[in-house]
Image 1 (cartoon, rainbow, N blue to C red):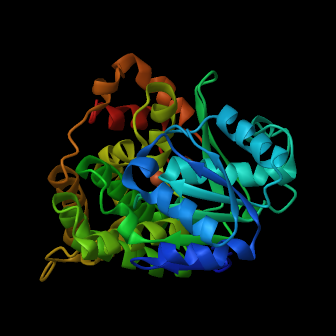
Image 2 (cartoon, rainbow, N blue to C red; image 1 turned 30 degrees about the horizontal axis):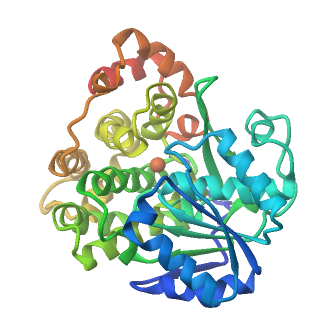
Length: 386
Ligand SMILES: [Fe+2]
């Protein structure tokens, strides 16, 4: 573990949090523009009524909405490019993203592309760099897990080439994040579980990454405490506002932690599996997390001991090594308790695919992991969840 004596810490200028705080969109939106591209997913915001709510708040604020629906899970280059054209052609001065992590990220990339120009493919493949501030962007998450409402990256998928990559820049951080736990009340248990485990991975991985730093350490510990206390309840009793509020806060904190301190192997492996086999992001992260923790143990004993305390494990009388082991056991239990039972094989992954997945996991998440893993070690790790 490298202890950082120099670091940078970035979050949105405005984070608005609390049950019912969506109402503040009426006051906030017109501060940034009079015409908004409203980016949504494939229908859940419409079904839950949150889209109607946002449309009427914008109307009351005299902000014209140009609706851009249909963002898929693991958003594509095409959906971002078409969204940026729609915003440009209709003269939008503002982007509002309403949905889960995929929608929040797609809207983030759209707001960046409107001002920077060209196809987002050029930025993903390293031919162009973000050089201009994005169009103002208000992010409104309807799930609690990705923390994408406060991050500086947008994860996009190129299905032709089989990769999942981020565009990443300080300029992409949303202008404002409106985090209203009431929007998550109707999420089904399996989404609550997988997004919640994504959030947990986004707290434990930054806390133990090579780029860990004091501000994200503090944030990550608090996020873990909230998940230890409330994830099981949010899954079992979806209508429990206090559990939902904890999970929305934990997700928000996880975004702040990951965008400033990076991630690790659970995320590194989850990305190529998502791009090649459609393994949902949170599920992949949740499946891998206990195995990654076991692997990282030699580099993380002291930190995992504190993770155990944050998660609420009974660690009294145990020495540091035993406490650290408790953290791994607790996370493995949590994954089971929230009902995450899928295996990679359920998505068509075969043992012969694993070396390629390992090779494709190279990138910033893997290099930030506290213990440097060989491709062979990652293949062994993936066999545990095949
Ligand atoms: Fe994640």
